[in-house]
Image (cartoon, rainbow, N blue to C red; front, side, top):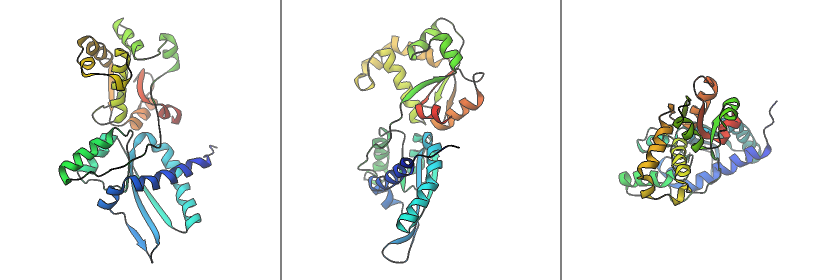
Length: 256
């Protein structure tokens, strides 16, 4: 039996209520359903829109959090979990398809983008403050036998495999829909260029040699998932016949 650590639901408790504070403008714009018999509500319903790589953990600890919160404070909390790719979640918010109480993207780089789109439509920023609570690195995942056989240690390893005519299948989430996909492509450029992401320049990205090296890696791509969590599960379910190596968050590998 898997034991859920106590810190799991405590982190969720912290994350949800810090999330309410940092998502103040979302809370104002999209009021959650509450039923109150006085000054303190007896029931709170929260819509939690989040990036899909957190799905396994959140689904496991949310019932524990709801139960613990009720026992501790006498308030019934219902958390409606809605997983989506980060870019997809932004589209859902902007178009009004989902009206979340809390939004948890895969990376803080998407918050200014949401603010930009929201301000164009409504004249103000929807999320003025935020605090990162979780860090999950992007890794190259693969099947042990193939990793060992070709001594894969990074994106340059994939480049040299492709250059030498080795047949393999590569994949990652769609960069236009998923933070995981965006970060994977950025890290491809970063390693080929030889600089950390925050030191990359426009000239680096326009370098034809660099572009061709990244293009060669991407020429081996067989799949682009709409979100990192869903893509990671697809890769695990379909195995090495479907994909050899794939870019995902580290926790996706641990969870699967």
